[in-house]
Image (cartoon, rainbow, N blue to C red):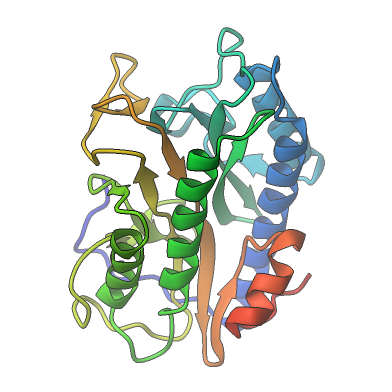
Length: 273
């Protein structure tokens, strides 16, 4: 549980570069997992792919052992929203969607990112929901500028989801501060009125992670005490990037190569590729 009384950790430019190093490891791991997603593969096999990339880079999977979590990734399939436990018995079928959340620690600094991927033949309705979820993340990141307020991010995410298809917006979970720990203050809601919360300052680093659902936004946790699923069984999507606030604007610390054009189009600070 995050203690709300803790001060927000502010990073120097040098520390942000170290966080980008961790972010690059996470980006490579997610790229490898995306390439491995296909019908017939198990989520435990995907977990092994990510762990190898992370450890080969001299980093440590930040999820493995976190409060007892057994995997190096969270692999959440279809109606699973977040925190799905990788399993040999969970084998992807054609048309399944899987949300992969991945974290790594390098030189004491954390990176955290998530993508939702289709196994095999996509369904148009899934692609639309996934696109809205991902774009809402980018809209939230665009608010990460010096002088803004934390809820400006929340408002941008929630408004985009509400205005583009009426998808469910999961409220029980959200983004968070990140740095020398994976989960730090402040908590970042994915909805709310703008102009509220802590002031955004240079050196603040946040993980921005919206979660959308095909129907209702209500969720429940399964008996494994980890896996969060939609109450109504509708499918869900999850996207996340770790981002630093710089004097020139947002810098996406977990940027992947396929994000390069988006980062340029949005006018964000170019990370060290």
